[in-house]
Structure formats: C-alpha cells, structure tokens
Image (cartoon, rainbow, N blue to C red; front, side, top):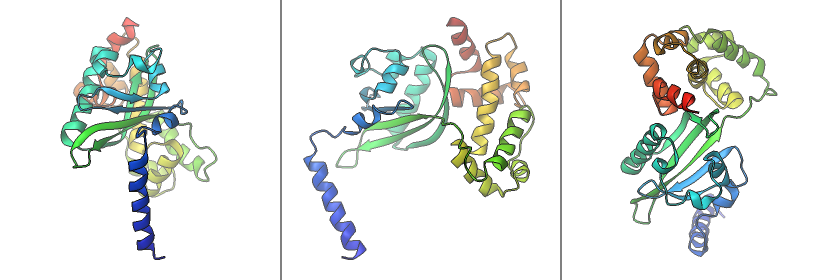
Length: 254
C-alpha cells in the first residue's frame, strides 16, 4: 500500500472512530492523572465545561462540580479574573490559538507557580468556533543529563547573576560556546524555556519577592533590569495578569 493510500485509510478510520465515540471528552480521564498539568474545555462564554482534578485542587475547590458552568470571574480574585477572561475572549473572538505563553499564577495559598500555557480553538463541523481547550503545564526541573547541560547552564547562571543588567542573547550564546540557534534549541530542551523566557522569569521571580516587602515599584523595576517603571509594569501584567501594585495588594491580603 502506498503512503498516500495509507493516509487515506487512516483518515477514514479517524472519522469512523469520531462518529462512534460516546464521549468526545475522553482526554479528561487522561489529564486527571497529571498533577503538573491543568486542563480545561470552555464554551463560548468562557465557562468551564470540562476540567481535570489538578485545576480543581489549584482553585481550592472540593470537586469538579464546583467549577463546571462557571467562569474565571466566579473563581479567581477579580484582578486575575479580568485578565484570564480577556485572554479567553480573544481566543474565542479571533480564532487565534495561544502557544508557549509563559505565565506566573498565584495559587490559593498565595504561593507563586510558573507554567507554560497553550489554548486552542474548538470548531464545529461547519468550521465555526464552538469553544476552546487549554492546558497550563508547570515548568519542569532542568534536564541535567543532557550532553550540553553544563554549557547551557553557564548561560543560565549568567542570567541569574546579572538579571539587573541589559542581557543580549548573542552574549549568552558566546558564553555557552554555541550559536544563537543552538542556544535557543538547547535551552528549550533542558529548561522548557527559551532564553528570553528565562530572562523574564528570573527578573519577575526577583520582582515578585521584592513586592512582598516595602520597596517602591520604581525601585523594584530598576533592581530587576527594567529601564523604567512603565516597561516593568507592562511585562509584569503581560506575564502575571495583574499590575505589580495589584499583585502586592493580593500578597498582603493573604
């Protein structure tokens, strides 16, 4: 059988299986087994239709029923909910997926947690938008067994030691004795982040810790490598979902 014939047969088998399935949300049971991955399916009003146990636990709820039919506005603090719902509505209104979005989430116990988020549009048989599905995966521990770990780690250590200064990807590549393309590829494999995401994460880790104290927003921005207050605020809100000031208020409220 030729490859094209095999693909045609596979396509027919997929269609038959899809028509035969009694539960199109079979993935729910699989995602229930992953404690480091949040999974959800939402309808056109961004309401939860399917969730996994990890999301339920992260929201501090007793069971899935407490989430189903509700939106982010019903579950999360208002500052975070507005950002989450706006992101959902962009996906649902534009039909444009989101991939590899680095985010810092604040869990019910006020502990920050980094993850990478993906959201995709779900379409009906006519091609119209019917809803969306998404996952947020916790950042994994670095792969220290990778053959070039030590070289890439040298660049990562440089970021951690100099995040308050301007950082250039080309300079990081030189430190690791790699090309820029190699550095980006190996960073992704070893740290599950690209170099730019690592810089953002390191700076905002430091910033979120400082926000628990008494430093001014301007002082924190300068200490974390941002040339001005507004640049810091834009990056923080894009990654965390709220402004530094609102994040500080949430920390103190806890």
